[in-house]
Image (cartoon, rainbow, N blue to C red; front, top):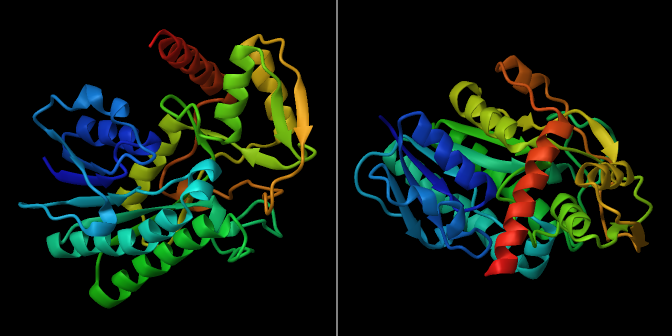
Length: 315
């Protein structure tokens, strides 16, 4: 049995990772300051002897006794709503938080995995995006705080690998959806699903011709674990190659929700990427590819949102 530390362990992806490593037989320590994560995501784990939750800001350092085998750094606001409201915290967790998490891994001789993002590609000039593409990011735009925090985090991770011989991996995560997404997340799926369930209009920023690809959370978690176990240190895209327009996606949500909602348009958001789709050849070489069809994953997600919204209404 190993010991895996997950920063951001009470977040959407972090909480699913906690379950995945517990299922592997590891002891898991989740570290989270709960500014965007939720204790409710891990409440069902907190009575287990092989699970520990530490409420702490990773930028202040993480100090643990005993051995650690894996450090997965997932702490960061990840939605535009989060990082636009907390730009400095986002930059700090990408820089200082990554430094502290790497320091823990180095001190313990542990493997380190960085949760990077498709946003490091910015508003790309090529589609789909391979890991060899360096990206096009507006460093001083509103989204730059997240994009550049992750780009810096990648550079820091590679520096530790080169200078200290630390075993590191980088996973560039594309749009992931599923149960435990924050209802007030601000990204397209939670906003669309919540509106559709309530019968409210779905708001699209811009024409809706901008594209995204969506990967179900179970597939993304499998991909992350595959990169940790089998990666060679180079960045690996984890996401679904199925590109679709935001307008198509909104209509699909309305259909699957059996909603009478309409669609309204507002002004486009600044620096909103117009294309987003991964090349996943590196991930496939590790034996991974997405398996859950979009409709199936969305049906599960919509069902979870119905329950969560009902519970919120009753509380």
